[in-house]
Image (cartoon, rainbow, N blue to C red; front, side):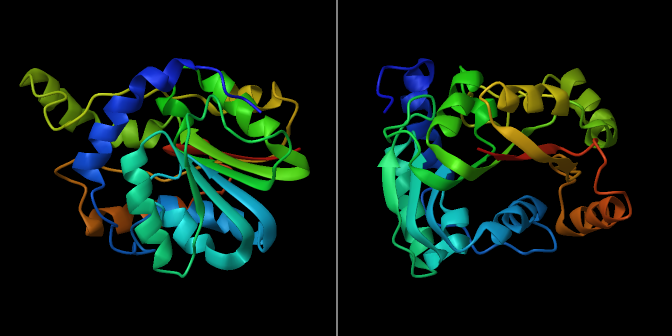
Length: 252
């Protein structure tokens, strides 16, 4: 069981403040037509359910815990923010789920080795100061033969980068970059190759690698525009490597 102080512990107050500002209460249940991230990741988790034990590492406001519900005999969520776990509990309760919620830094998970059949970690690694250590912890708590579903931001998201280039150039020219951020925190990105290598370094075997989703930045991020981008992506092969989010499904 890991328990030593880890690099991202220094970010706890930052993430507590972010949770207070951005996640004070459960969000409305998302619309599949526009919220591609949630439902594409759930599509990867669904074949693994029901299961005996599932960890949502970096569970945030609990939307995945809500969707998984009682299909895991032991359902556990962790987050570095105690405040956001309060919201996660309320979100999960909408489906009748009562997960174990544990405040923990992903770089130092408070669970014994080989604790979980399924480990889900979505959009967390890029916010760590030591992402490699975080991935090693996920592999450590996964049982032999278990499955890790992990996602992060794609540094090769060429479509979204091209679509947003004029907007971003105008923001930079006007000196407005970062003005809409309430809280500043680490935010890295990895190429699919880099991300796969990070997972492989733990001894896990990646079985599926994909990218998905295109997006427009504010103020152009309207539901109609997102639906159009989703239809554009649907016309591409599922093996494309230009989406915003990299997903890896790996076996222990």
